[in-house]
Image 1 (cartoon, rainbow, N blue to C red):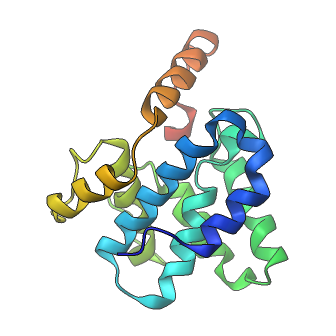
Image 2 (tube, helix red, strand yellow):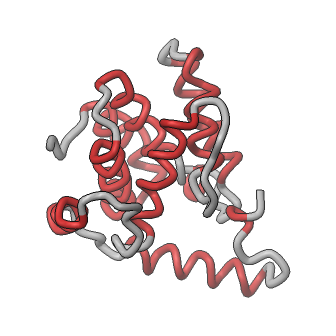
Length: 176
């Protein structure tokens, strides 16, 4: 399994100033999600889609400085897809971003890639406790090869801060 992807690398260089001190921790999360997708889906024509969705799925946290980041993340993905002349992927990738926090299975158009992406993110966010029947050993290898670097603590702190300000809606990324 390749632990590097040129699309992810190029996009991270473009957004490096936006991520600041969170650059490595978010990049590692992106790679773990991306590699989890590859554990589930071996179709070559979906690799680039997973790379793009992985980079943009939480990017609104930084670009818009918000924990309510689904729509800002989708907008950033749309900008990239227009700039790279991949508008035909816009619906699929924005739906991957929109549905990635849902607990229940997505059924509908593009369900294969949306479901793989949703599960891939949940595998990483749950530290591998959720595995959806996929190979625990390979998931553990990915986690070992690409360390957390405090990503989950970062998320916890962002959520806690949001809770203290918006106690009526502490997890807006789940209520969309």
